[in-house]
Length: 187
Image (cartoon, rainbow, N blue to C red; front, side, top):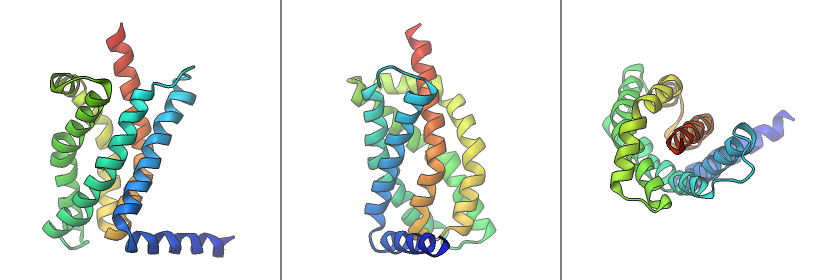
């Protein structure tokens, strides 16, 4: 019932407060892997998983979405704009969505994918150049409001788990875009 749900929420909050980096990495790894597998299995209806694609999402999920974003969201942005006011939330959201995501997050995603695919930097650069406009347009539709809410109302110690929950939807969108882009490249 309600009391058991509150106990789980309190336990998760206490764990995130005590082990924020571990909780961030665990939640984002689980999220990215499961989101990609769900997209490939139920939306794309693949008979066989693209394991390299799933590996890229898994590695990126733990390494950048967990550890990297813990630093960005809980340390860097909090140091730059420590308040949870409307203006601070707008500033954090803007730094995240107009600097971090297009110029750090997405390039690291494409580099991770290139490494898993056995490709080099030119592959990552080409994918970035071909895909960034459509990817960022989809990103902003979800993340501008979600990040404002997160930076305004969510305490820093549970910010990455919050982002991981919202990002489950984003990762499914990104996975679908990657499936679409890869299918178009195979034509």
